[in-house]
Image (cartoon, rainbow, N blue to C red; front, side, top):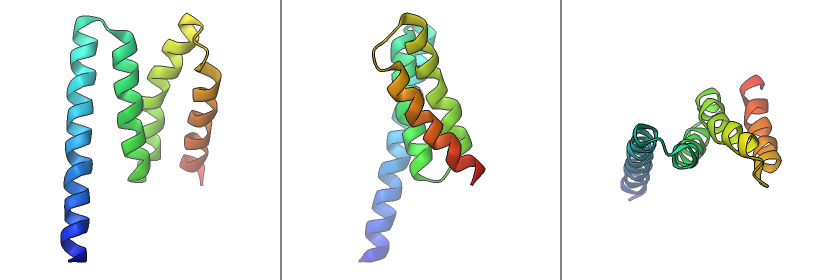
Length: 91
């Protein structure tokens, strides 16, 4: 029972990653920088959950850069969250 639950969760994570990666690519292709950043952030969160902190930080940086460029209210909050992920890379 436990093995099937773990396997199911892994499949769900994989599917979420695939969808976010596809959505990010489409957003980039059509020039939707906000959409690209949001999907990159979400993909970064998935990488973080799996312990891929360096990849997570790289993806999350895309949204932070965009938010700072346009003066978005969440830019510094998201930058702080990104800093926390980067701190995990060094641990």
